[in-house]
Amino acid sequence: MRNILIAGATAAFSALAPQLADAWQAENRLTVNPVSDSVFEVIGLPGSPGSEFWCAAGDYALRVLRTSGTQRVYIVRGRAAPVTGTGPSAVQFSLVLPDGVPPQSGLFLSMKKVGDNLSVDFARTYCLDKKSVDF
Image (cartoon, rainbow, N blue to C red; front, side, top):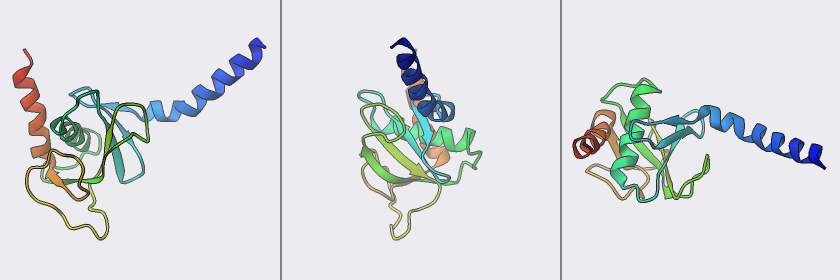
């Protein structure tokens, strides 16, 4: 019986290991995971506002994907249950506008509309807002 439990636990960990290895933590402590070659998911914490999702997306785009600050980051799936981990909600982003979706312009914090986008640099300003509040 003990061997069966150990084998089950090992199999469960093995299934999660690639996901855990790909997990990355943004400067605001939100987890970011790749979904595909062009899409990544930011997993929020309980009560995370839209500004925290944008901060993490911009941080990931700059530091992991090594894109420029002028690159646009697009919402490709609005706030919903995460597909790459656990948490109350997640938003999926890409550096590529989804086919057939017009880009939206303005300041978006609802995190629901596909096509909403900010530059990497502007998204990261939400990280700075957080730092100015934390002492």
